Length: 328
Image 1 (cartoon, rainbow, N blue to C red):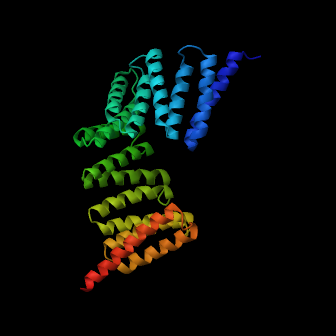
Image 2: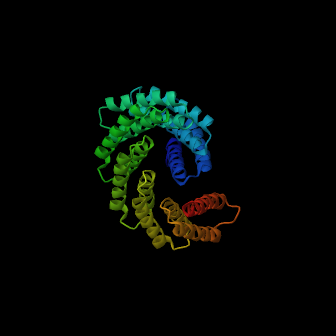
Image 3: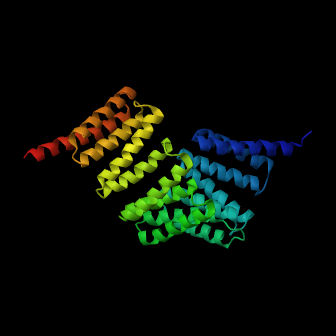
């Protein structure tokens, strides 16, 4: 017969595993209730500052963060960080990882200075570790880059994003989807600071990785294609943008059929680009096609329907105004 302590540890381990699974599924309420039960068992069965208590504290912090309860999340992040420092040491990997996760939450609630301090501590600990941790360092560097970006300190953000991408390539390999995430984020940063050619390079690189992983006609490629298209549209390269939007639309029609809501989004993008190209008949035609799909799938009161209707109305209005202007 198993000892009671062994049974409790198995129950505790199962609960912690369930928290992770609920978070993956986006079920924050179940994640919180399960993490609370995990913490109760840890406190009752493993008295003192134990690894089990630490793991339950960090799980509950993440669950509350996912639920949007940042006040409660902060309490448990604080407790987990204190435990990590006591159990594992100030410069331990565990302390660094809690600091990085805590910093992400603080960044989301615009407490940038506190996030910056934690991330610098995390990076310092990870860089001093005897074992190489390029994945974790890359993540922390990218997070710190984001903090500087949000503070409009672009000169400080750029080298951090660059180093994060380099480390991600080293850690995962050049064609890994994680690298595509880093590349896309760096592209968006370059787009923000109006380095559009650099942005295009990194958006296209992400697309290339997506094509390697998913194939040429997978719906997973659509976001990559749209990113490239938007960047071309911003700098007035409408024909190039159109080609990427057309490809995205064809993929979605093939995958979901012509009446799917995602197809309506693709048609809306094409209508917008045709409006910019002053291809007025095409712009209006694609607006009507998109609206027909929306009406078929959504009620008039649906928020998506209201937003899309306003966007399409703006495209039609601009098209009509352009036509009038050309007649003058």
